[in-house]
Amino acid sequence: MQPTQNSVQAFSPETLVSVSGLTRLFPVGRGLFRRTTSFIHAVDDVSFDLDHGDSLGLVGESGCGKTTVGKLLVKLLEPTYGEVLFRLPGLTPQAGSPEDPIASSAITSGQMRVFRRQAQMIFQDPYESMNPRRTIYDTIAEPLAVQGIGTVMDRVDLVSEILMLVGLTPPATFLFRHPHELSGGQRQRVAIARALVVEPTFVVADEPTSMLDVSSRTGIMNLMQQLAHGLGIAYLYVTHDLAVARYMCHRIAVMYLGKIVEIGETEELLHNPLHPYTRALLSAVPVPDPHFRREPPDIRGDLTAPIDPPDRCRFYDRCPLATLHCRDNPHPPTEEKGPGHWAACYEV
Image (cartoon, rainbow, N blue to C red):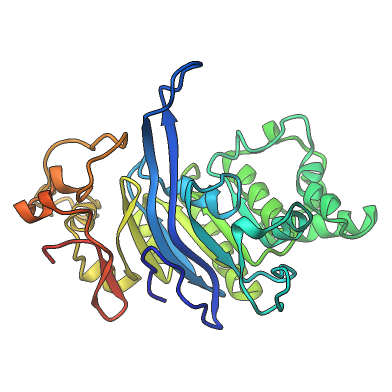
């Protein structure tokens, strides 16, 4: 599905989430008697679609806005501008049919419980995302209690089943332990279990394997793929690791300073990168060959400050292809450069 640009395109039957012109600004230097004039452009005019059972990897360096996009999609933050359309089970727009998409801004307080069941987020840090005073059972069973799913005994069975599914066996040895009694990999499996126990349709996974060792990482990735195929879950997979994105995602979107600069099918994007920033990211991926020598990334300078950036290409100051046309014109629109392959660059 092609990304949208500044407007919401018509929903196709396969589309689950459609993001159009999504923008989030954070004020800087706000005072008691002073009007805010500067903003951090954390997410700026981001657009893409996600189909049922699809997986999109959101890739970029730290601070580019990946996690903020995820929080906007699950309504932990509200956008400054732009819109998100959902077609989630149980969510119906007013005076609409169940097949019609509903805008994020139109979801009422009475519909939030349904939305929370269908859209979940796996947080990056399993040490910070759990209450240390609650047992593993309490942590995973809480969403079931909030959603009114099953009796107390039913919840014990459901929690035991999901613990087995995420590889924490035998479940009886984990139910009444506390987070500090688990390893980092085990905590992350608990975080995944908590998100998936209510059987959501859409999951934002914010670097769920970044704090795990290699063996645990492989197991978690395989688990999430199995659940995606078995339950039809659509993932937005936030990561800075291109190897993980390649393994996990059908498509990859590359972000730089709040903008999506390239998006396409995973293998096509990795084998034929168009945007200079994507090429720089790929050139920085380590190669497991001690005799291989790779040319350094062909970019210059440091990351540009995201506070009130100039109205031109965000990558201009570091780009080896930059021209006067890039300097004197607004940020390039996301255009289709090949079948299903989109990039925001005047020079490619």
